[in-house]
Length: 181
Image (cartoon, rainbow, N blue to C red; front, side, top):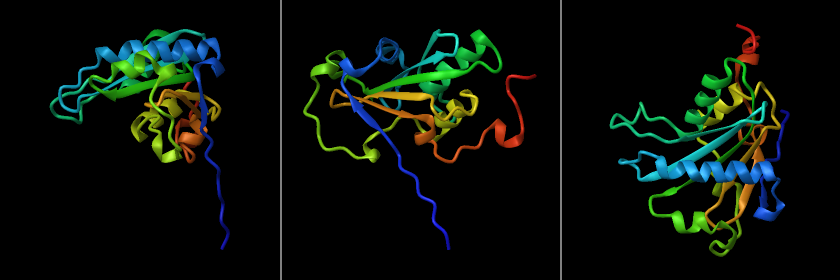
């Protein structure tokens, strides 16, 4: 028997350690969060995606009473990218800000947030499996696309789609280049 292991890397940063593009992505994700329609879960999420062209597209979650027709914030932002730039547009970075309704105080003051606990990879929710798949399909098989998450203790968690989705299946697995019609 052979075993293959992989290390998952998540960096914890404060605002001063981010690039100006990363700070802007987080700001845009935070700006989208209050627009979420979450009458069922009361969990508001904002997402912001930067395209290869440098444009930022935002999204928020929109719940439907059927649950299955709910739009995830990350999906909303990715679909906005595709609508604006067309098939084959590439995601190069994404930020997510999500929390229960009424959590705006820690989001507004994320630099001076609550005490920072010892954390584990399981403490982070960069995106659900559904959204990780959407990101993978629109990052053109680039495992280095950055994912940013504002944590509830006031730090930024940063990883890559390659770490968040370690065994992807996308168009390239089928021999498809989505940049070509």
